Length: 409
Image (cartoon, rainbow, N blue to C red; front, side, top):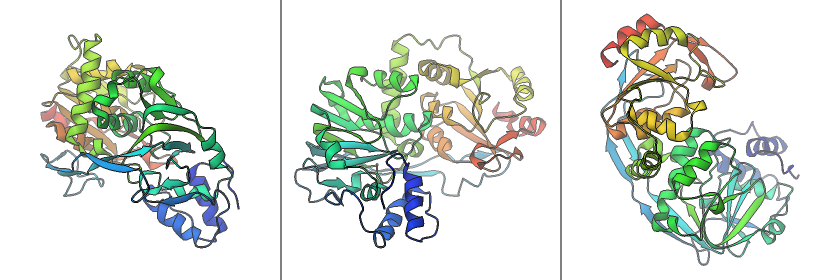
C-alpha cells in the first residue's frame, strides 16, 4: 500500500501497523524505528525502492566530527514543597549531556518529509539512518517520488546546517533549547555569507528574531515545506536527530554558554534595558491552551505584597522575555514553554515551578540547577482534567502554597 503524502508520521505509522495486522503503533519516537523494521518484515516496499536506508558509516565522502564532548554534572538537589513529583527520581541531581557530533555530507540533501528530517547522500540514493528521523522507513510507503524531489531541489553553493528534528509541532521551548543551539556547532562558519540554516516554514516572530540574534537574517534562512528538499555543497547535520537528547534539558555547558552569549548578550546590546524591571516575576499562562492556573487572580493578589509582578510571555517580543528573566531574582510559574528563558536568569535566582498532579517534567529543574539557581517544585492536586493530562488546568491551594513557599519568596 502507499500512504497519502499529507499524512503525518504518527498517522502514517498507525496506518501501516493496521495494514500489517499489528497492535496499535506506539507513539514514542524512540519506538518508531523498531516498529518500522517489524512492519518491513510483513509489508513489502511500496515506494522509493531504489533508495537505501542505512547508517552513514561507510557511505562515500561523509564524515563525522566531535564538536562537544559528553559531560556529567551533579547539581544541588531540588526542593519539593508538597512532595516529589512523579517526573523526578532520586537520580535527578545528575545530568548527563551526551556527545554532540556534526556530520558533513558533501553534495548532500536535506528533505523535510511531514514533521521529520531525511538526510540523503550526495548521490541521492541513500538516506542516512543514524542522522535522519527514526521514522525514515516511512519513505518506502509514502506515495511520493523522492528521486524526482531531489532532482528538482535548489542547489546551494555553500554550507547548509539542518536544525529541525522530529519534535513537531514546535513550541517556544523546543525551538530555544533543542533546535536553535545546534547553531553553536558552526563556530566561525556562522559569520560566513555562504552559510545557511534549513528549517521548516517559520510561523512565529520569535523564530525570526532569535535566528537574527544568532547571526542569520532572512537571506540565509532556507524554509522547507513538506516534501521539499535542498542540496548543499556541504551539508552539516547534528548527531541528535535520530535520538533527541534535549541538551538544554540536561544543562549542557556549551548550550548554556551559547544561548547566553548570543541571545542574552544580543538583546542587551540592541537596547533591552534591565533597569526598572521587576525583580520578582510571576509568569502567567493565562492565554495558553492549557495548564492554566484557574484561580490566578487570587494567587497574584497573595504574591503582590512580596513584590511579584505578572508577565504574559505570549504577548512579548523574545528580547523582552529574555530581559525580564535576566533581571529577575525570583520566578514563580506554572510549568510551561516560557520557562525556557530560565537559561538567561541570574545564577543566584530562585525558581518555583508549579505542576498539576497529573503531569510534570524535571527539565526546568535541570536547566535552573545547571546555572546554579535554587529550584523548588509545588504540586497542585485540584485539577480540571481535559483530553490530555499534559494540558490539565489546575487551581492552587493558596494558603498552602504561601505557607510552604514562604521562605523562598
